[in-house]
Image (cartoon, rainbow, N blue to C red; front, top):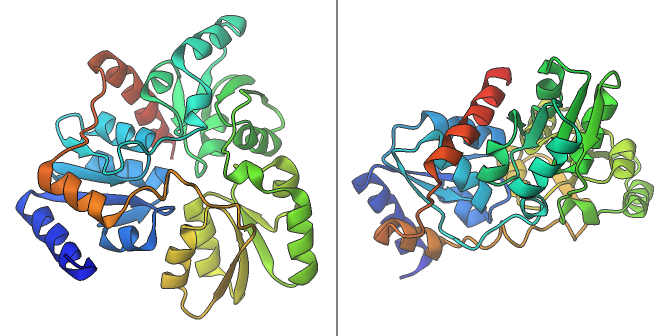
Length: 303
């Protein structure tokens, strides 16, 4: 079938099966366009927690679909591209976190949502890039462990200098590729254009940007700004939402390296097949699910 026929079939199956399609801002444009909701990790978490659908088709990566299952344990959660993982999430496991906790006894653990269910289960509270500062501020301790993203952790530490934020040495392989000399070169050629970057970027890149924020915060900044041109320093998928919502504005990607291979694995064919055959279902151990849910729910209370 051609693209339009496939879209029609997906919409038909969605109605028949009482399904909802959630897609991250980094997904391919055609996948974002067939989703019922497109957002960043925080927005997707909230939608997964509150949906009345029977089936959640999650167009993202594995840890995101896991979180949806944790929030909605009685629903069927499908990950169309079942091998879509997250290298940063793989940079720490539950055993490594337990060792870290022994090294720093009684120090609360803040876990970035880009992590496995097992790591969330070993943490005190989760956060996203949109609410990481608020989450760390909410903790009644002058010292916290932050896993797994050192760049986001370093950004949080600079916003809250009164707290000692001990960071695990993980990072997003996509955002981490952007170097300061690239930003300097772009600044030279587009001196009057605001540069907006994600806090998963290197600290020196973050320090030179005009605005730092999560995907949703970057989108909001653009919508509220009177400026007409922007340089975007996060995964290229967000350009689709920005261009769609702001047809009178122009956007330039900070670096051609800002593409997440895992986020781009999901195709329309995958969404159709997963929904039609109800395959690639996400399962999480019940004990792990209960502990991880506590961390995620604490996060939502703060945000």
